[in-house]
Image (cartoon, rainbow, N blue to C red; front, side, top):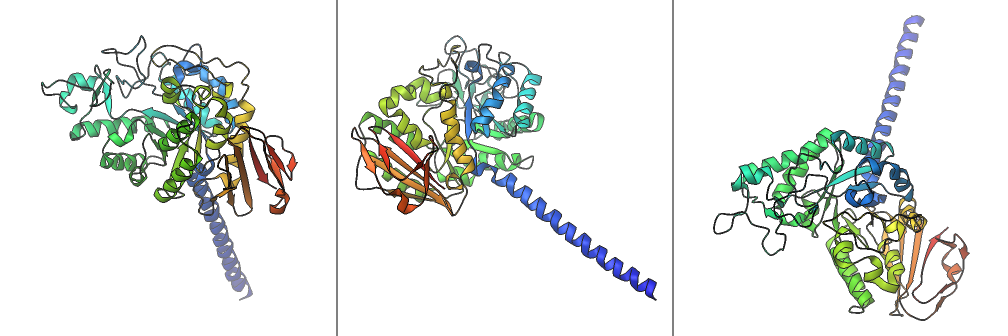
Amino acid sequence: MVHKTFIIILSILLICCNSKLENNDISLIDKETSEKVNWKKNATIYELNVRQFSENGDFISVLPHLKRIKEMGIKIIWLMPIHPIGEKNRKGSLGSYYSIKDYQAINTEFGNNQDFKTLVDSIHSLGMKVIIDWVPNHTAFDNQWALNHKEWYTLDSLGNLQPPIGTDWWDVADLNYDNQDMRNAMKDALLYWVKEFDIDGYRCDVASWVPDDFWKNAIDTLKTIKPVFMLAEAEGKNMYEVGFDMTYNWSYMHVSNEIAKGKLNLKSLDSLLKVEDSLYNENQIRMYFTSNHDENSWNGTTYERYDSTHHLQTLLAFTMPGMPLLYNGQESAMKKRLRFFEKDTIIWGDYPLEDYYSTLLNLRINNSAMWSNESNNKFEKIITENEKIFAYKRFNNEDEVNIFLNFSTDTVLIENLIEYGNFYELFSNEKVENIKLLPLDGKILVKQ
């Protein structure tokens, strides 16, 4: 009887232990799942132009840079289009990256399939994600689709292929999304790179020019393979409703450029932020930037567009409530426009701004006040009486970051910060009680 009772008690204990272990396992699984879902809350993104990134302009030449990119605080590497470029109606000697000749092939200038796989695997080994540029609205005129499936395209009155209406993109032919066969082929091509190379998502060119219902179906299907990250080169709440994780803040770029020209004042930025707050919620990430391939090549470098305010504009864009983008070469204080249709290698030098950007990007990673996807995150303007000072704080529970930007030509003294807590200045790492803002100067104060 004692023996039998012992067995019963032992069985109960084992059941309880197993139950506790299973609950712990579930807890660990839940935590891991949560981290997989929430990794993007403090992510940063780096746009990489393979052609101009190195003298060779290929995938393998990117590999030695990955560790330093990671250490700067980058979580997502976005590769500009990697596909073969059309030759018919080509612009320049090398053509536009966005004139796609084959959606399921590699541009041989960049390497081969194995080289690309090596790059993807190397990025993953460092804990980063990789997304590739996707051009769904149009193809090269000599794409096989254009040769074999003319009905997949928007045709002019004579039945000929034509560029997207209203553009000067005469090197590409507009696709017709009324054709279901074309939609299926496009979706299959999107699935191919995720299945075969394990990429983590896409940056989608002129995404708003493609029907929402296509995106909804394609993104839902992609997510059956893995939780992809999707960036739309577009604005609008509908982009998130169909599955995109992040959209371009072109509105901010326009306002910041006009402020730098003196055509708008800082009140325009206040107005924009109110609109942003009314349109988007904390789960809908907006991408902020001072440069990208379009801005750099067509509108000028940050030094051209922002002139003497380029430092202030950088602090502003990289501390806004969204994800910051760094365009390759900015960490080397790149002061040239990269030619779009020709070879034009970035001059790296000794990366004079690498520590500068690293400080900003790692602030976003490590301080919860700077995160996205957080319902507790708040953005609040401070010092509203001076029209030449743009100052604000971001806070989340105990974490707080204060940003002071002096767009005037006067020196401004801000005193008695100790009343609001203990702060250190981000770049100097020195404790401060008062701050002196020199003309066109900015300070970021982090609460201890």
